[in-house]
Length: 573
Image 1: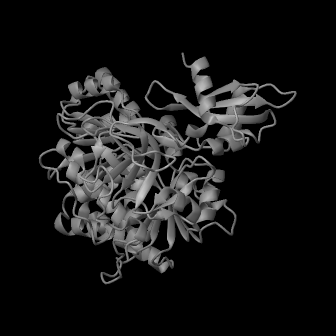
Image 2 (image 1 turned 180 degrees about the vertical axis):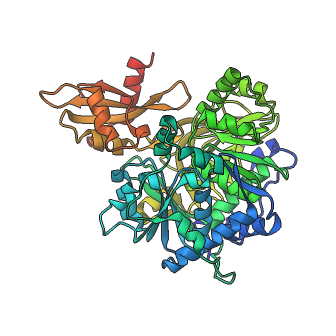
Image 3 (image 1 turned 90 degrees about the vertical axis):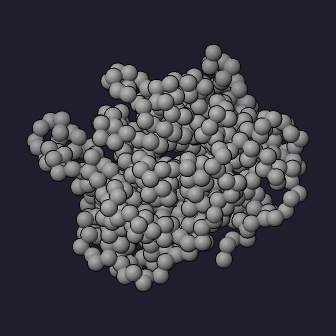
């Protein structure tokens, strides 16, 4: 059955129930999307059945058709079934963008099991908490970082660990070249693969027969994904997303884009991130599009791919668009043909929009989302009503309220308040975190976003501030508490506060305010190295400022907002 907290509501007791923003939609876009009653497994099977010869994936120039993709999905599903994976079991993915990532994702879902995505650049310490929390029975990992999983304590280490070699999916000529004992090629190979002791090679899956056609499929309301998200009060929480959550969000994107029959989507954003997953993987399946996969944001790879296939849809973040503009000028390459670019995860500068649209002849719009919403909530319309500086209007089938964060009462039109969201994309809750779920999901299916917004006279949404203190850097969320806990392990740190300061890219720089321990001085390079050993690189503070004291509440809690304001006033001029 559908979870009670996400049940469709017919109440009209909130001011925006009539969705006045719909007037800004494209004429082809509907107020609502048809909500799925089947699973993502059915969605992929439909694409395999109807367009088997169409190219589904492209990776370094090598291509995979939908028919080939469907066959691989069923062989991996059968291998996992034989290994004991059943409906509801968790299977961890620790992979960069590569064809095996897509195959594994849908193979797990075909069994009714639950995908758990992880950043492959996480340290062993960061991964340990998540594996303790979700208890995955199997893991499919990049061979380069497999040691981070095989070295986990026996009581939390998955029974079966499968290692993926990305080179195996590259074109024959590239695979052959990487075997040559030439300095640069050898260096490239070492960056791409590892020995992965104590694992089973991914290629073993392909020896299986396809999963039986009559094997039970999951339903729309079954759990499909655990997406870990950084909180402000400690360790990441697992967001529970169902098949219906994910597919309905993909359908919203489809309604927005109004895709043609030959769309090409560039997956430069990581698939382990909710934004990359939905705007890449899910929408590609909905649209039966070609998904071009990039394991990292590398301009050489992107422009090499453009010689073969120009993207028609490019989801990314502002720094990627900026770098592409700069590189296109250097290389004398045209960006014409990129019809729609959808930016998220950080503020999109107005001047960047103008430059991009002039260079491409297409549109660049800003949207907004969060993991708890699968993640899409709002976007600027892909028409003349779009507004630079705004995060747009709600997607179809999505309701919003703007409320006083203390009383949860609706505020007057144009006033600032916390954004609440309701729709079929809203999560079921946090994995094993009932108290956190009850604080975030309100009666009636409303989700508290923690973002302070205001609506203009045409009901476009403008972000004003965040109640949550999560730092957004490079499109990724960073928990201040997690970084502070690592810094406090260093002998020179008596206390600290970690905040985000504005960055010229439109995001934030992770910044540490530190009270030094008695008899110690602050050494930024030493602290960086200390953090690098325990945190993924994007979480490591860029700047370290010595302070005599930290502002605190009456209860002794550090007031990070005041820390941020103080550092901004002193150092961001």
